[in-house]
Image (cartoon, rainbow, N blue to C red; front, side):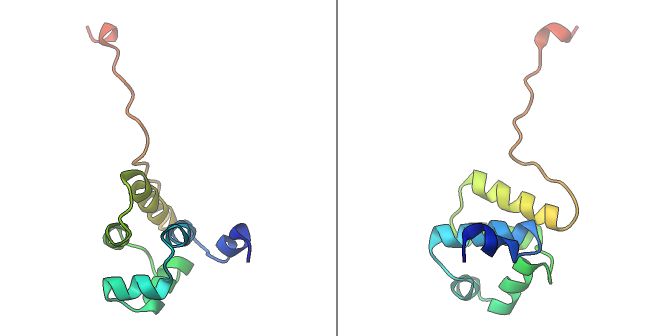
Length: 102
């Protein structure tokens, strides 16, 4: 199955993001489940949208996969998006203009 077609089967952003990270790490849903001592069914449910991916679950996955700060932020943003809100941990802060502070 092609990458775009495979990601289309996930009904949420978290599922697509986690699938990409699992592929990058070369591990399966079952291997992730065993690593974090949960069921493969739960991993799949968070990937398909049957269960919501909590911030704690995103952290657990990120730690288990040793994700970079950027990839961790993207996973959290995807989990938030899947729950109906926007979270942008990757946006750079605007520099303050000292000339305007008087």
